[in-house]
Length: 136
Image (cartoon, rainbow, N blue to C red):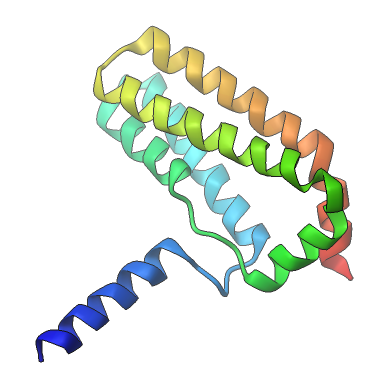
């Protein structure tokens, strides 16, 4: 019984951290919603909601392995830079969560602005290539 409970718990945790059947589009839409939530929380000076939104961005679901393989094949040698861009957004989201928990509004706004810049730089560089790869 104990092994079954542990196994079930492990499977639920793995499922929550890896949405292997989700599409990149679904993941990005959720990230957009989380980013909107973050902006709203900042405007209302709701530090708890800002921390929650930043946490959701930092630890977002992954999209399907099939789509990840297509992207890796398309980006090829650009993949390390693409990964660095993702890691930058993750790090900024963690920094935003920390700033929100510390109720440090100036730092929170600074990191949120940096995150928008990082997201848009990645979109500008990779969006069309990835969209085209996933259409095939």
